[in-house]
Image (cartoon, rainbow, N blue to C red; front, top):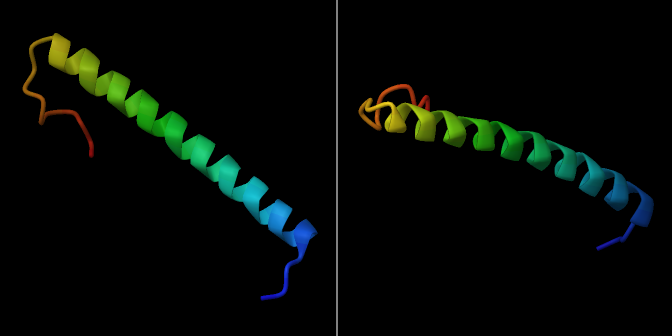
Length: 49
């Protein structure tokens, strides 16, 4: 396997950026689920998962 540090770093940076965006979206979703469940709605409703 040929190791290209620059390309690898760029790819890792892009992957980290995507993971951070996905993680933030998941965090918001989890917060929404927790809020709706606290309001007394069934846990299945409004989860969007």
